[in-house]
Length: 143
Image (cartoon, rainbow, N blue to C red; front, side, top):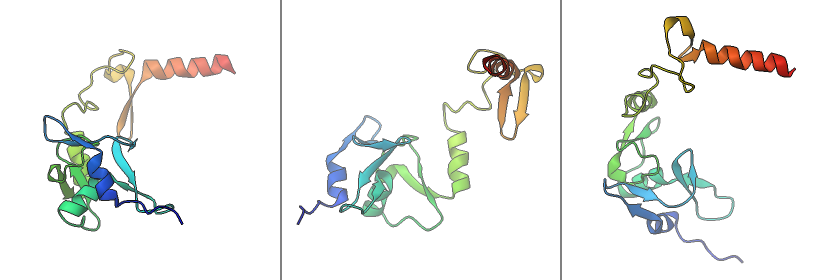
């Protein structure tokens, strides 16, 4: 028989550090910036640390809702930095977060201006025509 694993919440609390803004930053595995911790035993799966902490200290997350990080720090698992909201609200808040620059950028990553003459509009993203043309011509010459 194997050794019984301690509860995930105990292991979680040992692996967090509090930063100056009050975030409980998980010092373990991250997936897309979110903390991930193994559950009770082999094959039991993993849990997102912010959900685990919220459900332990506050309440179950209502069905159909996401937990929004009010602090905008995905590695934070401080339950008082989390709020259950709809997926639409969570995404909208993320788009308005400081530093999000999709619609405020004036130039592409290569420094070309997003002018009407140099921009393709695709669904919800802008594509630099200059960069697109460079990629297309390099593909043609490589073939």
